[in-house]
Image (cartoon, rainbow, N blue to C red; front, side, top):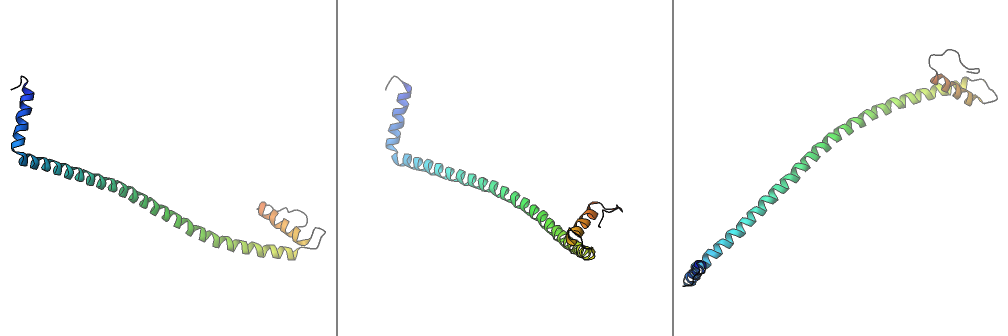
Length: 135
């Protein structure tokens, strides 16, 4: 027997394993199988957590997109109403402009130009009663 106890223990362990090699092999296979199963389970848990994080982010983005769509749809509806009102105002102003052009007396600048200038001046100065000459 050697002087060192560690070497003696190692030699006894090797002799034991040599005699019981089938049992040692079974234990080794069991350890490797458990190690593989553990790594597989860890991998599955990581993937589950990873996918849950991405799904949470996707849900938040979908909620934000839905809110943005609601705001966008409301703005489109409001713009459609304003377009209808603007069209009515434009056609009314066009009728007023045509009437002013027709009613204007002939001059050197042209009735259409003078009438358009008068309508513009009236729109820019609402409430004033003194008008420029020719209006």
